[in-house]
Image 1 (cartoon, rainbow, N blue to C red):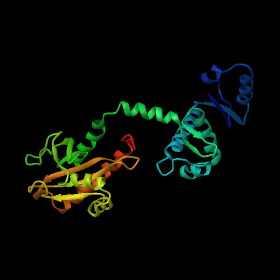
Image 2: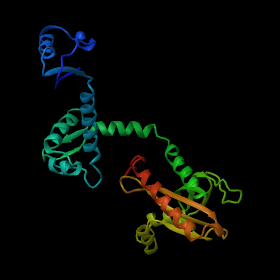
Image 3: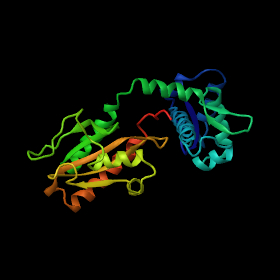
Image 4: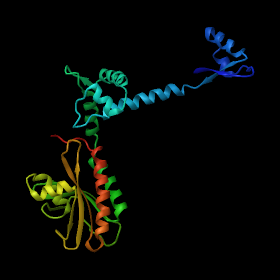
Length: 277
């Protein structure tokens, strides 16, 4: 409990909170405050102490989250610039993080993520079901577009529909999970191929645009849009796709689908565990 002096124009009566702490030197000091015409004492809960603790945790997490593939090692000044924290604050928090294994500091004086993060990451990855991450994205895509949403991975000369949520419409593009399709046709197949063949001019165009739209490539009645799903190391993990009956997937519908596809793919970057490089 914290005690605060405040100006007052009248005396206070004894309160229960005051009597609870009436002992020793503290009680004597509080008595002198209580009988003053100019000051009185009030008790405040330890809210400020709790808030300080929460702020310290938030700042420590900000330091850890400042590291990424482009900033795998940073100086004290670089961390301060990345987090907008004072260097003295960074140094104090970094010392605590280093002591617990969340950061390491080498002889070059650079800070790097520590082994405790690897341990926690390994626990997360072992308990991870990829479908638990992908399926919510597919449901949101279906809700946003009204069309069928899928997640494909490459395997040899084929692509596999690993996860799928079909459109609620009675007339729709319907496929089952686990179905294999050619990898050289269709929006998802084109995206997967673009990241497999880095020398291809067509693949470079797809990578530069960040999406591909197919109209009747695999099935003359079906159109689709797809985007790559990339992990934190820049490795392709699969392709998100929205597919529909061709006559319903006009230019406006395709444009809207690409926007939500890119949004979902971006959100997955922070959720997917890093692939082995």
